[in-house]
Length: 288
Image (cartoon, rainbow, N blue to C red; front, side, top):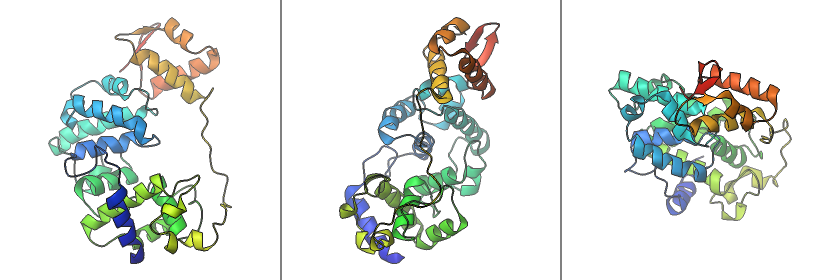
């Protein structure tokens, strides 16, 4: 397994993107914000929102002092806006339980609202240099191909997959943290889901999938996300009306934002249930 370390780390040193949440100048809070924003969202969409977020709220205490609705408003069009509520709740917990400093241990991070296994491991590794298995989509795909010889990993993380990731993880903490982000970058830039650039891969000569002749994926159908006409699109339209308003919004404005009545009513109710908007009058709504 160690044969993979040197070429991947050397490639990362030469090709890593310069991102504001990387490097010694990045605060743990910057790393934490980036991890929330990057979930199912491309880097190019995250960059401007992350910059504005850190300008407005450079510390967890700054965000925690604002109403949760301001976090939803500042989230803009990143999508999956419940992440904004979870980040706000996590910031409040950091202020209350950790004196405003993002904790460094996996267990303390995992105990924060809205933080699961991946996010806790990523923050501990990338913000504090700890040794943890960090399994995002890109890492899972690189290890599936290079080590296990299959085009794509299973739909959910398996015990065997986690054991492989742990085996290949360098023993040294600092090197392990760099390895995790390096493999992630390799999957994002070279070992992509579609059209992988094997000619540019630093471990192409050691890749089990390439050695096997690039066998096609034969597992369960992979989910393809749709957008047009979905409840996600409807919720996004309704929420955009509220984000762009300085105060409560009359229901008539929401009616104009989405023509299909049944879907609109259902999505409006789900936004209220998720705590993303509040029903503040008989026919008016506002951000929380």
